Image (cartoon, rainbow, N blue to C red; front, top):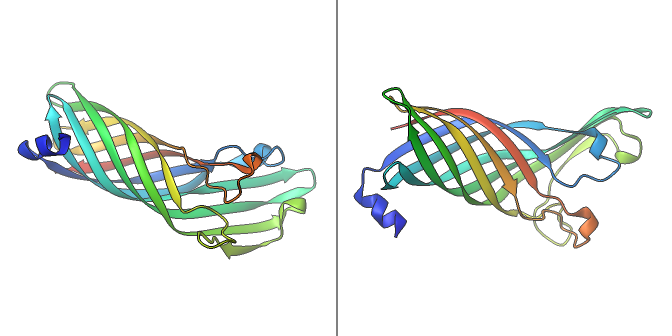
Length: 203
């Protein structure tokens, strides 16, 4: 119903891109002191469908770089383990605009997303001790021996400023709700956490 209502109004289109800072929730006791944000990127295309005064629904398609980074320094350790995952996501956000005069509007939004991991790789280097050996391997998302579940579901939160000419400045947070671990052991449960910053343009 919301999409149908939006189709009757003036639909606009937008493109956003920027930096992702990702990590995994619930690190092990051994790893949590070494966990860092893993930098990557995102690019999102979306439609803005007005459904009420200053209120829109924004469905989109997004390419998201996620993952995790462990940087070991101390206790006779000196190395890194970096996991990079590229995922295709479909977000649907509810967005509220707060006009600030002729210059533009502040916007706040939230909504669910569903994603599917397309590819991934883990690289380790340096002296990792009991945390692993130096090298790299592709992440397997299928089969009985998969390293990670491919499907992801969660919530997006965003805030930013839209100039009157359509230029966007935005920040967001992705709260993954899916346990990505292939194991049913509750001690190994983990999910995505992604902080993002970017710019864009709405036509």
